Length: 443
Image (cartoon, rainbow, N blue to C red; front, side, top):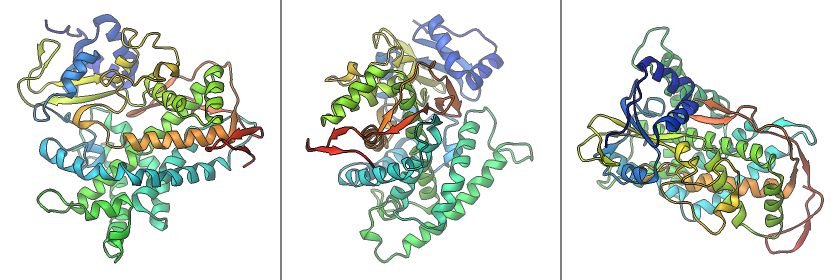
């Protein structure tokens, strides 16, 4: 049976997707169900799916049949970014990018993350409400800069100052159905190209300096690893592609995690029973409830609400419907994770649903799925684990009866509209250390 087609003018659909995307897709799900067809620029015919069985069919399809959508985030991150690659080039690049985010290197990052958290937390206004989004952005940006480049310096200071504006501007542009090929003075991509040129100049200095380092093979930062990496045929990655991939890591590696942490503040401060249970569990040396809380945060407040594939070949069948070549398939992350048939009481913030039980592979998809699943998922989980553990051991989070913060689109990502505002105090009561010993938290 063919999925229903949304009978709205293309202009109305475009407005809905650009300015009201989350509410628009939710309203269509309520009317048409878990599969329906849109016709929106610049993607054209688009099948929206949010049933786990349909999502499995999409994510397990061969890469030559279901590939990267066109246009994609490569417009912002560069054609050499993993987001802009398809087929064999994508597979080869993914093979190069996976090692930095696994094994012993991940554990080495934990100390770096905690150090950056404590440095930022020392500046917090105790006893006074403040928005945490910017604080998390600074922490996660500093973490990924140090993980990528390994050291500080004038160039990193410049990137630290310019990247947030650059990434936010590019993220918003990527959601607009505006060609990035125009060169006229009114094309918004012109300003983006100026940001990108400045980024390229700065990072080229760091690449040249790294190549000249006689001890490059002893370094464990991501830049050093990329410069030393080789494809299966022995060829190195070009400087242009290194810059694209580093921008991908810098952009995707800090804003999404920072935004999830802002949502954590918003949710935990409004759910005292969850917060107190989590603190008690951490004080006793537990970890399972913290991991369950992170899973639930990403379920109820996914920062990215959809991911897509372009149908490049014949043979993709979803829910009995043969999706034509040239169509786009949009996977509704927020749609499936808020479906009461998949997650009972979906609007309830309840981490216990994941205690002792892992989420279903094709129902919990904040990092996407299949061969294009986010390579930095483990790193993001590590950041959230380290930061929330340190936060709740060092600080008391004041709860509130204030209404929940609304969803606010920051381009690709959705953040709490007031920045995850909270009030914190230093903890002075005894808590348990990792080995179970008693210690006084006064830092």
